[in-house]
Length: 397
Image 1 (cartoon, one colour):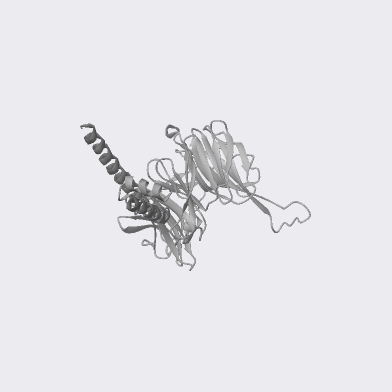
Image 2 (tube, one colour):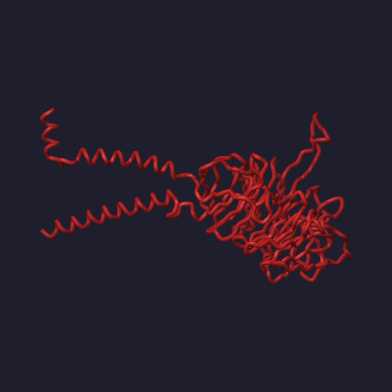
């Protein structure tokens, strides 16, 4: 038997054991390299240079270092525009306290931003210029909690979530300042956020508050459940209609992202997808504190402070990606622009920080994993090219 092995080895290349050893070393090093570069790259944490150690309540990004913000400090609540490295205060708490009542910042189709600081009024902000849309009060007075323009830009209208005093409701409004009647069936839901889905239809989220049932009924600790509503309004004075509603068992919904004919509604205990074609709800077990859309129909789901992974979602499914370091902040507000995601919140020391994420770096040539992929393709392209060249040379003889 030993003689047989000896004859076999004599027939092979004298460098075969060296080649095999180098191959195994390559596999081991490659495995460590793949594991070390499989974590998410492109994340960084920094201070708020526009308003130091401020708590960002609402924010709307136009571009890199160009945004509108509602921020709270020890002096009070600011509403400001930051661009070209300079902050322009629209509402300064030292002279005006009205920014403390702002509940939303909504970007409009023309690039301006809308909010509300008083009843029956919409404040439009374009850079440092402001204007007001005064809504007719013949159908009552109301505060505006949130608004969303009609997906059909030609309609030149929007849907409002309104505070009617003893309940929240929906009203449509045209750009000329004429509101519709309020929706009569409020279904005991406190509506909070709204986003347009398609022509004349919107998705709204809120909470339903009810007393606990059963023997342990305690009015002092009511049961709170998140709610999703499908709302239709075709214009005019007629009130909007709540077409469909889904009540989740727990948690809260915090983000709505339109993806074609679907709306992704992300929450702390589940993610719900509403399909406008067949008017159905689909439920996923994806949990998060923030969900933000990137390019190429990709949605990034971020967890709570100290979580160690994020979720990358596409129409083909989702992927869990480990973070290089645990999530350093508890996210309170967020936005995105030009391949960057900005998350604002508090770290474990009680300091307010900005966590930035350049999602274009994930898998790119600049990242470790991208470099490995490029190296793999390059090396094996060279190897196959050499093998092909040798075959051609041998065929000539």
